[in-house]
Image 1 (tube, helix red, strand yellow):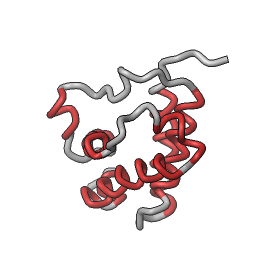
Image 2 (image 1 turned 60 degrees about the vertical axis):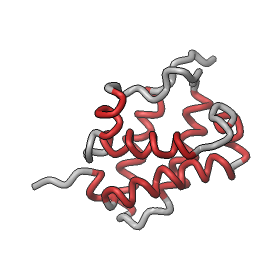
Image 3 (image 1 turned 30 degrees about the vertical axis):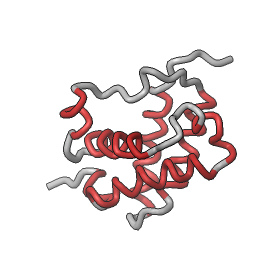
Length: 125
């Protein structure tokens, strides 16, 4: 039986941690200041939404889709290449905090880079 990225990264506890570490990185990294300003002062709700989204995206329970009946996280935000790069910077830092194998983390990050570029909804020069 083939394991999903969700399972290989460590299941629910690891994906919850990934979402937490992602937004902690967004709070801490000066390079992510622009995308941090896109979010409200409190990140509690969005951390939970990211966990729910990543859970399904990584092959675990489809929590986000089941709750919101959509897979779109980014509709209200203007996202160009700079924003997707800032998003990836935060995700790379967050992924470093997980105990999964480096090969697994690298593969998931590669797929996430495609996801980040897919989220772009603004043309940039």
